[in-house]
Image 1: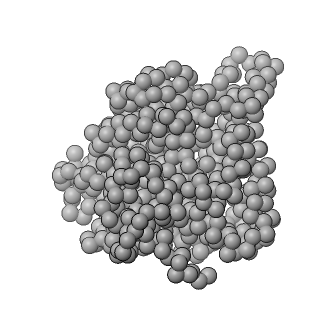
Image 2: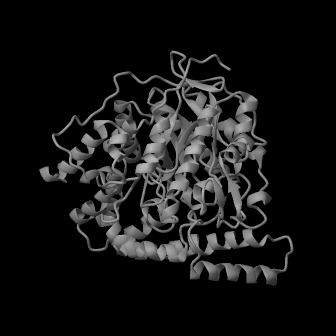
Image 3: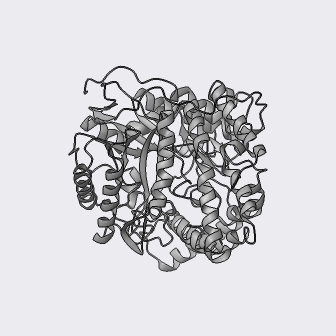
Length: 548
């Protein structure tokens, strides 16, 4: 569809802001809508990198370029782009069931248009320019295998998905932003949670060889297509694997009761790396630990000279509620209550983490692929969440750890950019979002206050536990697991036709206008968050590699 000249003005304004003096200029006057600033004359719309991007490689505990100079990977993740999530995009339930409901309600062609426009607006050149000006050196791109392969046509690859990815790879290359490809949703589901596009609470990946065959074959296809692309820093081959939890979360297989299966995980990793290396010998391969990238206790020692390792380090003070430094009162059933946190405790927590110990023991790079603070809790505690994040990143920097925050852009939870509450999309779904909060359908947001429905679900869970009468069942974990099952999976999926109905009968022009709310030029900047991240992202890595 053609664009009016007037439609280009907000983008020009955004680009001028991004090019002016970087993130500080974007954020010095508080949280502001990017498209609402006084832009003045139009500035150049490109900030192309003068230096040709070089392949990165592992050298001891460092990542270096072709000259042997250390490169520090610091950036963020555009979750919600090629792998949608409920709390990021605003919908309920899993992506593949949502797409089916949208096709049912809107018709296949109109539903396809909806998702294509969301993809186009969610992450494009404006976002790449913004991140580079903020100081980011890398973006970790979460991918859903369904963009590249259909379950009904295994091993046959979809050019449309690769074209979407290729477009952004070229933009990142133009502007000097490295990319890590992250397979966030794998065939057969590598974990039982919503973020692997799982609507069933079942994980078939680890037990069914057919899914592993497809997983390996897809990575071979990525390697064939991208083996000569230096813009790709590496392959994060499997997000948050959970190798021994096939039937869903229950009190006896989560938290401290989880028992990893490293024989299974190590076999998959070794097979995958071997097959990728037959095609691509140059790219770094990142491996994550078991139990959602937290457990490295039985991971095989490095067996390839270009492997790095990734842990996910979410911490209590990043979520709250409570003061930092000070006492945090986490609402998560697994976290307990009344925990005192400060920088010293954060550093102990980081140094005691399995991923940190593994990287130190084997002298390999550690990349914290996900961590972050949230900003939709008590309004007067935003500063506490920022101080916690600031301390956490300073600890990563002290210990020469690479990092990417979760998440870049969302509907008002933890993004560097968030959708404007006054935008067309947010205005349309505002009542729906209130229902989601009341029903607790976004399992990620456990830090939000109790609601009548969440309290009733907890009471039901406890009644069931008492009748079952198994003294081994942990009451708090039982509430956590039942709430996820009933509210996130059942209720979230049940609400999908209602979400789809919000867009029924709209023309393509109307849908395009609504989905343009996801564009960077219309988003709101989280001033404090961008300032904290830019302070560290703009710092160069020091020295050249010695292999130690």
